[in-house]
Image 1 (tube, rainbow, N blue to C red):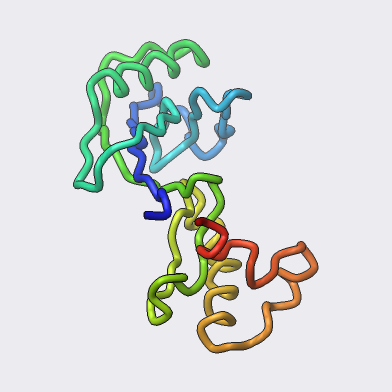
Image 2: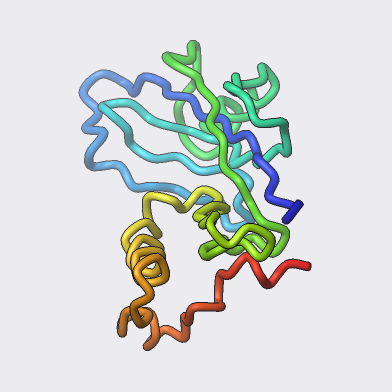
Length: 161
C-alpha cells in the first residue's frame, strides 16, 4: 500500500587477461548510471545498472541484461568478452520517493518498517540500524544523524498517505 516496489539488478563477472592484478583496477561508474564495472574476486564485475520493476521472487538475470553488461565491458575497456564467468540478479526495493522507510506503520502500530534501501542497504545499514534501534527503544535519534538533518520523521512510513 505504500508503493514499495522491488526491482531486479543484473551483474556478471568476466575473466581478466592473464597477469592482470584485479585489485589494482579502479571501479568505473558511468556518469549517468548506465553501467558500472569493478574488480571482484580476481575478475571484473559488470552491471548494466538495471533497476527493472518486478514481482517479489527469486529473480534470475535476463539474457538481454547479461548481453548489455558484456557490451559495456567491451565499450569501456580494451577487453573482448568471450564468455561470462557467472551471471546473477538480485532484488532491491524502492519507496516512491526512493528514500528508505524506517518507523512504525500508521495503520498497524505494532509493525515496524525497515525497507526500501534500494541498492544501498549495506552502505546505509549502520546509520539506518542506529535510527531503527533508537525508534524501537523510544530513544533520541543519535547525534551523528541529527547533525546530518535526519530526524525521527525523515524516513517515516507516515510520510505516505
